Length: 114
Image (cartoon, rainbow, N blue to C red):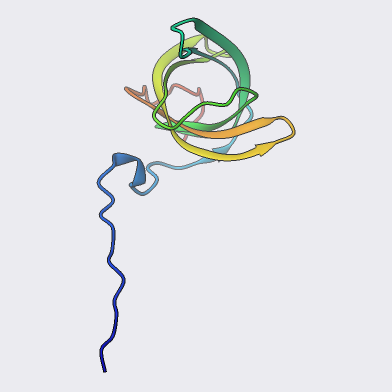
C-alpha cells in the first residue's frame, strides 16, 4: 500500500519564528506613520493590546499589507522606532489587528518590565 505524504513547506521568513520575549496585555497609545501607495505620508493614532520587547499587537482603523514598513511612536514615552507589519489578524469594530515587529528595539521601549 502506498501512503501519500504531504510536502512540508519551509518557513524561510523570519516572521514565522516562535515568539520572542514575554508578552503582556497592555493598552499603550501609539502613533503610526507610513507612506501610502502614492508616497503620501499617513499618520494615525491607535493603541496596543499586547506588547513585548520586540513589538506589539496594535489595533488600527487603516488596512495595511504584511511587510509594510512604518514608524511607531510610544505616545507615553514619546520614543519612536522603525517597525514592520508581520501579522494581520481580523477586522474588529475598532479596527484591524496587526502584529508589529520593532526593527531595532530598545528593551525598555514600552516602559514596562517585560
